[in-house]
Image 1 (cartoon, rainbow, N blue to C red):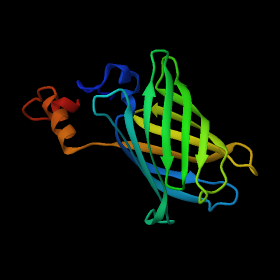
Image 2 (image 1 turned 180 degrees about the vertical axis):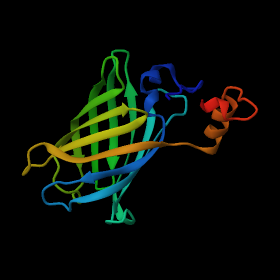
Image 3 (image 1 turned 60 degrees about the horizontal axis):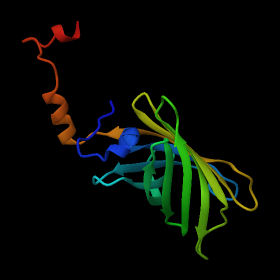
Image 4 (image 1 turned 90 degrees about the horizontal axis):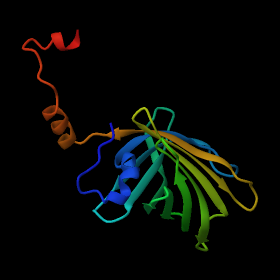
Length: 190
């Protein structure tokens, strides 16, 4: 269920489906890099201003699903205008800073983004741009990323399926909003 916080900047309502902390797993595969399964935690938050704050941390998983080591971290800010155009400024731990532009699909919670500008430090690896697709599907957040380097044309490199993390406060709020249950509790399920 998508909830719209009362203190959310009205301009951000179309992006409300992103709010919260999401966790799950995915696959990473790009020429010249280790192919692996990874775990990921993503948080979209707000403070009342006209942007969402974004943080993502991922880590390599072994065959049993245990954390092996960090994979990627990125942080940024997401905005949307009245024409449903989305802009994202993002910095990654590997020394890359990106400006992304895209749009929110009509009538569905899906965002297509492509890099418009890329800046790299001397320590970063080769990278010339990317695309991302984020979608809210059956209460889950899914995404796929594509990237290009001077040697490798644009191609998929990471994707993940994330589930929303529910806080104890959110559980309490859900409990307060439950309909009255019959005394035996069983009739509710019939």
